[in-house]
Amino acid sequence: MSAVGVILAGGSGSRLGLVRKATLRIGGQSLIERVVARLEDLEPPILISTGRDTHSFGEFGTSVPDLDLPLAGPLAGLMAAAHHLAGQVDPATIVISVAVDTPFLPVDYAPRLLAALNSGAAAAHAGWKDNFYPTNAAWRLSDLANLEVGEHNSPRSLLRALGAIHVDWSDTHELDPFANLNGLDDLIGLTKRADAHE
Image 1: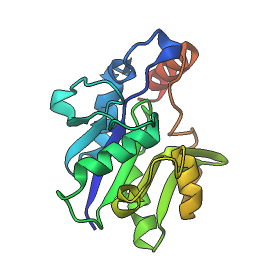
Image 2: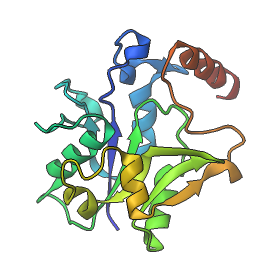
Image 3: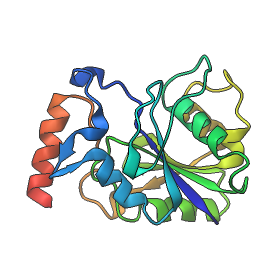
Image 4: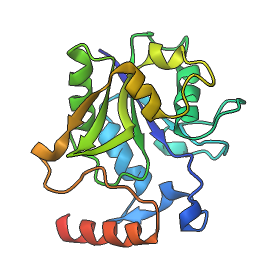
């Protein structure tokens, strides 16, 4: 089963002074470097959703801006990625998405989500205990490609409609590997975590 990676990096970083989060550094590496390292075993190239921005991430993958649609946010990024892939890859391809501000992504992130889809699930999302991370998920390209604007307003809504499986990493990780970076307090806390555990 072939799979491609999509990094969702289109957020404005409004709670961090409009900084481009992908370039922030944790443990000596930028966030995008850390995420790319966990997706390197997937089919190249990695797609990087840039939102309305046309910024190029060059060496890290193929930048994909949002389509000209009345839609924004992570779901817009997924739809743009599906549009980019249409006609280039098998419709049965799996799309592994991840938010760029997830610095401690597990080594087995993609394999475990793929295993869930191999078992017959329509989609699967990452979790840690009761925490649910809808942007960190595995999707069937055919489901994303067939989405209509307005049908769903978020990845969470689409995952629920698809009956997605919750893949829980609390059995192997004492700390939440999907803890993400939204504000300055998160940046400080995640930096301390990297310093203590890496």
